[in-house]
Length: 282
Picture 1 (spheres, helix red, strand yellow):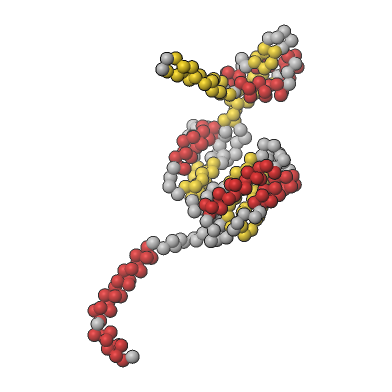
Picture 2: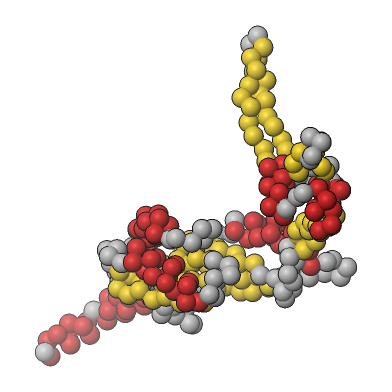
């Protein structure tokens, strides 16, 4: 033991150089460690949500949540299945092992979602998978507002200008928008005139739905050129709704929407002014 200390004493400069190199290597490693002030301790999970407007909580649990859970059961690496059923909303949390690949888990859940859609007996229900982030992946919230700008304009600006730019930022997985006033078109029907023309609300809906479409018509060849034929019938303003034909009347002449209805731009129900949550990727 004494000989070891004597040798270290003789090679003190080599020992100091080794300590300096060790400290420098430790500092380099420390700068790259994934250490956060608030570590993410949330489990590795995938979220599947379904929206069924107007459906009661009990029916949501029986007709949506249970079939989705049954479809997700048996996926390799699944550790736990949890769900939350509310009026019109169903959310299923599929929790995986911590050692599993989250991208592979998302792929497997996507494959099972097709099976879950086939088991749903409620028409119009949409299944959506949550973003590739965790419960603690929220970065920040912000609010868009300005003097003299309506909530409808703020909602349009947020959806079509601000949110697409935020999604291009590296590391951003999802941008959730809430609030504002979504622009809609309102049609006010006159019951007396509908009765006089022998029309129903269903006739009005079908007339507007059939008149708001676009279709391709192939092409016309002329010498070495091809002229593309397209049918554009999308509604672009409320004034176009007036002359839309509903159905032939008694005298085989079409009755126009402007005779028995009044159309005007409106907005969906207003919530709080446009808060936005930005979530980061895993």
